[in-house]
Image 1: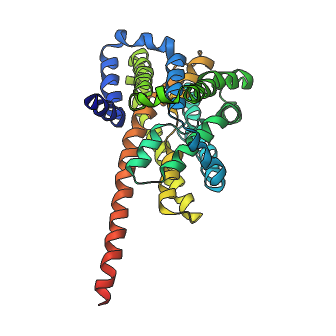
Image 2: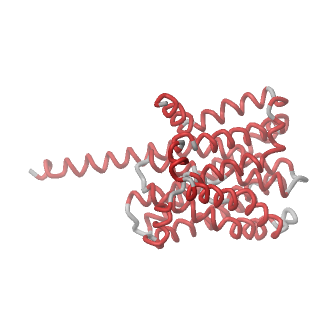
Image 3: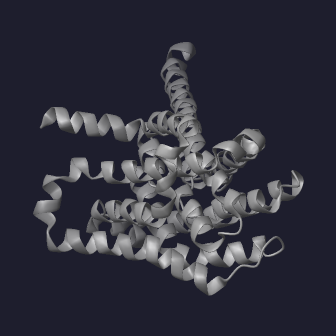
Length: 324
């Protein structure tokens, strides 16, 4: 059992590697993975249900005990990333499909991977979890409204249909998971260590399906999307961090907010693109590439934050000796 738990922990913490491996497999053997695109919303629903099963009632206490921190994080989440996505789409003169995909990523709430990266970076994990929960609950309203406002110049956006999509694939599964945990807490706790695998497997299958279905098109526009996605993610991490510092928040909170702002629920972006913009098939591509990249960049960001923290501790400990 312990070995199984270790394996689950290893796979969950190395999701970026799994995504890369399966994406390469899907690229060179698209027929084996393209079928997964027919079940994108199902896979995302499973991922969100898995997230709901891991949420305890204590996690909601942060909403009431630290409203200021959560408000700052969510405001930055739903302003910096959507506006950065819109600006990049204009700056790079992206074609309609790709512009829509980038904006969809920018308008989504924070992803659950941000909680793991925040832990690795030594940030405020409860704050990260709280921001993910709150932004996910706000997503049925905020995400469609932002997409409608920012992507409306490229495509026709149905506000009601998109809201319904977010409710179906995000809000209901998350609430369902929370409800199941409330009813069967002991049973869920017994398998808690294995629950992240639900989300890991679902996200890997979503991205593999997208890569398999768009293998030929990735060759022609993959580099452009990669550049835009990397810049978009970097802007989120940087501006989220700088804004939190400017607001004079504690260092752990700065780390949590920087990561939460920069790491999006790109699985939702893929699902929304597939469900609402079937006429724009490449709109799913930015979300798929973002899913790979933000795990890599998040890990690098965690390393930078940890190094700065160690330097600060070393400088502080050496200061008295210098004075003597």
